[in-house]
Length: 328
Ligand code: FES
Image 1 (cartoon, rainbow, N blue to C red):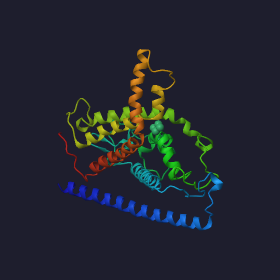
Image 2: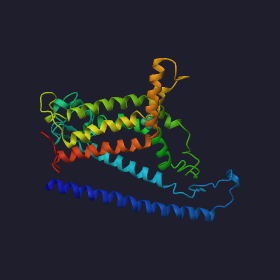
Image 3: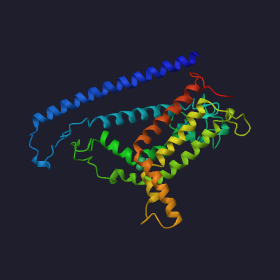
Image 4: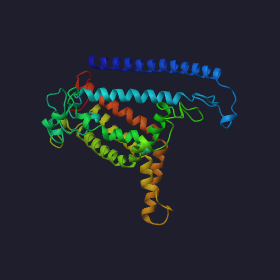
């Protein structure tokens, strides 16, 4: 029960810090934005005729709504997630508990058994951490298997059409919102999938990688139902952690199968949906994928937050900070 109290206090403290800090930052940035707009209006003419009737200049707009709110929160939220993932990957330990594996470390390619809370060797694909990796491993990097696998999901998210929208708006401010003046017209003006951003074209291929991760994380969820991860030989049961890990691939699937590339794969390159049996199946699939696609932003955030939450849950259990209620 003590651990439960500590856990509740920790969750409340983190919530207060995140919400309180976020509100403070939001107010500060809003005030800064107002000052910038006020300063700009002193130096710029109110003449709007030069730009098709719109105001020109950074942050200039005729919009009266809180257009800055969405880029601000998405930018802060993603930044918070990136910081957490980097911190968690740097730990290299406490990513395994009982039969639970943190999704940030899955699949485990090699395991350094000297690390506390590392996965058992039997749950790593290629066994113990090899010497040849040590020979090329940067000395300041802990032997963390997370670094070996994070590129796949990262490439998928970074090239996602939704993520592009928000980081172009939030981080590049090119422009920060619809009908809002961009930070600069040169040299970071949006130019589509060109120059440095040519890699965005890889998105349709990273989708297959993401599907592979869903299969792997589904297997992890299945393993989590067996005591100590002993599939078919251990006792079958369920714990709170099993539920957390079961929800994880489901949420990732709602995001991955709502992908624009998936929608094209399922329903693209067709002139009509009626006719053959196969085309009618594709039409039905396309309708379902379209439903997910319309909620792509929502599922992008929920699935991303749940991945972080799953890691936190496994980590806290592994560290002995919280107790995992289970049937074993
Ligand atoms: S467009 Fe977002 S995952 Fe493909």
